[in-house]
Length: 344
Image (cartoon, rainbow, N blue to C red):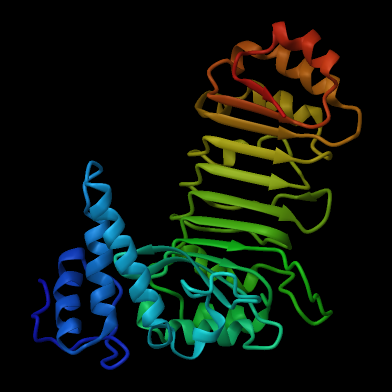
């Protein structure tokens, strides 16, 4: 049931937990917040109005709401972000150097997608995260990208108090300041989060243990070491998988009954794996396939395998081959390749 307009507000002045409210309930809460002068109420109502504008709404109406939203975010930046305000880009200062949090997308008055990182001269990542969880505007985060500072302290903080709505998590490589004691070489401390995630992207070298999740539908990661085998995992809903740098063994795809999109970037998987994949029952349910090869001179072999099994690959929406393919070689094989092949 929607909350009464007289219910306590939950903004900076009246902290009340908010996670699963519907849009109707949010609208009621926003009205209550406006009555007590909490800027979060105006923010919710303005963004709800923007989200419900029909596609053919006059540009003037959309522009007016966009300007009102920008003004609200800029005027109330300090109160909305609290102690993190100096470390969050604001509308009038979008080029903030070394931000701790960047809001990538808003939804219904709240940050929906965020990027987090430690700062050079400010809070570390675990402190950034704890401050984030205390702010009403950041309690409905669904998508998080984690950069500099990923380590045991952050892993402990997020597992102890995960965002209830978190569904997508990306672990980014650190572009600077890599001290020996920093980093999280093993995903194990973050494994408890997999029970609520739908998307997990690991873009830094980490050891990944076997994963078990009935919610994960997209997984991508870089192997810790070249030639490292992919860990046996139980992911019955996994539909999209991207791997880089590992060893792929025959029978691999049969582990994932829902897999439809597979991307492999490695010089270590054997041709025998591709033959097994192209001739297996798994290829029938595939929609997209990506194969990346390096500078090992195997480009002709890959093209020959694809050409030989063209009939079994013709149903794919896209088959991408990545590598330094010679133009003359591609031209010679093109008549034998299925139309879905794209060479980059």
